[in-house]
Length: 460
Image 1 (tube, helix red, strand yellow):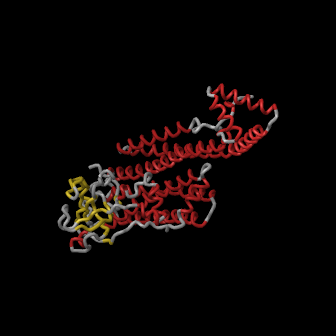
Image 2 (cartoon, helix red, strand yellow):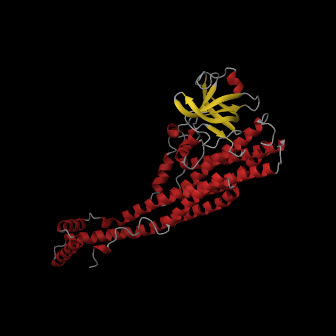
Image 3 (cartoon, helix red, strand yellow):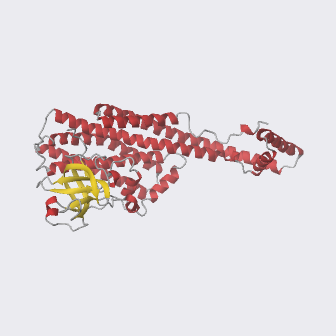
């Protein structure tokens, strides 16, 4: 007799020996990313993007190998559990002297190991009845695999998203620094066309990617094809986004060499279009990595089915409300009643955190200056810090908010920035559902603020 200890409850431990080391390496690389970003070390951040990408690939390969290993051992463990169940069932039903002797030996060994006759008897009874965990090695291995893939998969998506973020941010800021250092400006009309063409290309890439992902989930049922689609789209986005970031970074460097931003509404608007589209593509990229890890392991079928059901009652387009486009001058002239939702564009000026009298709380205040007329409107982000989200004076913004007339903080007319609540919108829109689930990987509307703005490139 080999003894009860020779019957493993699970074939593998919850983590293989390499998983913790890989996750720890990814965590360390993510911390290094934050340090380089805060230090504005763009050259080092550019190199670190490759490190993050390599770690993301290693985590994905680990998850793939773990899933294959589980599939292989699941077949063996199914046979093993069934065979062991039959052995003990036969032993329980056998009244021969030999079977009785085996049962007595099992009880004696259990008593010796447990030191408690009652517990030993309960153990033997459970074995003979087929109600012991020893018969569920396959389920134990499955649980261990799912637990491991949950951790490794989350680390993989986060690391891949940061790799793309590092490549995008380093390209944009480095292009801005080089352009301003060389004093290559000011911008020319042909430069605007380049940026507009880039925005058109990014919009096509974004819309095609979102449409392809939604269409597959809504009309097809092929896990392998969906995984292939995610890999292909992710690769296209990862290669294009840093190039677009470099273009807009250089263009902002040219625009900022103008004596004044006045009269450059079309130029700033086009630059912001590229910035917004790069951010939206980054969200889609994070989703493609989520798909890749979601389709691995024993829960892949359930994950895929749940993902397909998300298209049943949702439309593809975002339902985030957009206000009526107005200018600051139109607001001053009386357009927009109290509480109306409107959208304005302009350059940020006088950005500050200040005491908010209604209710008593610190809020962000700034003026948004119209680039066509020079007129400004006062804006409040109620009880939120836009500075922490990367907004700075001189940034060009497009924001949606509610008209406030005779507010304590602006007696004439002001705007309260709308805060997007994706909880309800995610039930109606597939795009908003993806945005809500991946909000930790994307800077799309940080803190829910309904605004986009050019990045904090200035250091003066």
